[in-house]
Image (tube, rainbow, N blue to C red; front, side):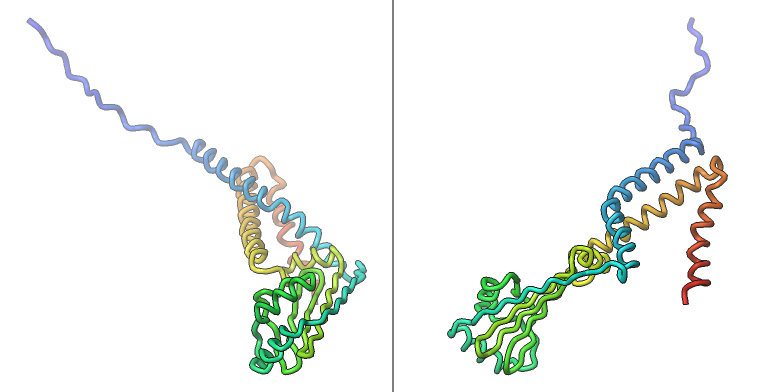
Length: 224
């Protein structure tokens, strides 16, 4: 004769909720990960922008000696006739040079005018070629005379223009936007990491407050 005891349930008990300390550790680990990734992305660009911030602030003390290059060529007769006819049809327009003339200009001068807009008149076509750290232009007259001039103001001027995004093109403009977003992530994650460690570092909030108040006071009292 067998006896049966009370039945036992094979179901497992529900999992215990994660401890607050464990959640804090996971969150802090994520902050550190985003912080170092954004700092790695920003590293070289932040050094560049910090250096050029100094050079721009002292632009009057940093002398630049422009170097000017001037070249002259003569447009071949068949292309001269094409240019004259094209100029007569596009007075006061801003359209690129005809492809054959653009190819000749690229082969004759150290430039690339493909797709660059030219200012047209009855006498000539003028192509402005601004660039970081300098300037350049090309003028081709209907009589066949072609002139090219390029001005370079040195590598510090080039870096300053890169800082400002002056005549740097679309890709560099995108890079500046991405860099700015990465800097925001770097600063926000750094602030949150400081917040988590503030209990063990009494100087955290006074230093943060000083970093916020100092530029505001200087702007209010000394910038007019």
